[in-house]
Image 1 (cartoon, rainbow, N blue to C red):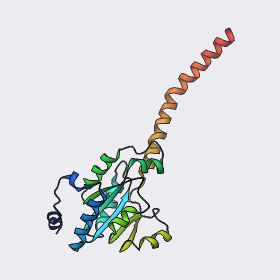
Image 2 (cartoon, rainbow, N blue to C red):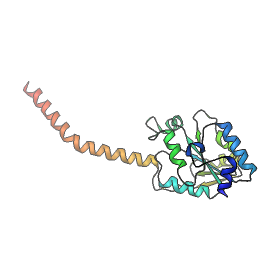
Image 3 (cartoon, one colour):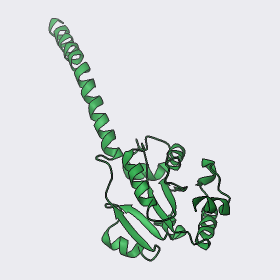
Image 4 (cartoon, rainbow, N blue to C red):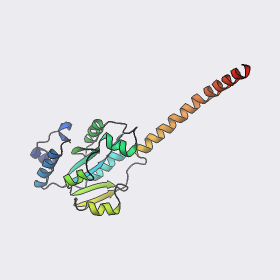
Length: 198
């Protein structure tokens, strides 16, 4: 059935043709899919340093329907939410990595300047998939105006990308402390000895 969706829409296996950065093109693709009676699933996120939790999550999301559309946050959106040193991987690479995961059919760039829930309102998916901490209960009720249903999944990895980055930073700081502390102590002792002699 997947191949009939692809041929009907003119998709091919070329990843760049399944990366959509134009909202009008996305709306046309979604309309074509809905005309074919395809059940559309939408999910979204940063996908910085793609890991096993992302793969498991997207595989579970795909099981909710026929076509999985994934919104990937642009660099500015991530910087605004997670700080100036993020993302680790630039948006074009993140989009391509997500697209190469088997369950993913279409990837869309979510821009920082887009209004709230812009992608959700454009796609109006049959199923919106999110993690537990993405939306409040009140927001989920509001989202049902734009979605057939909202499915909330648990996180599927023991640590998030942010936690992995913090762990790496701590390891690096400890290595620096072990290697630099003796040198700093020696330099301070030499400086103090020089002052005392002078």
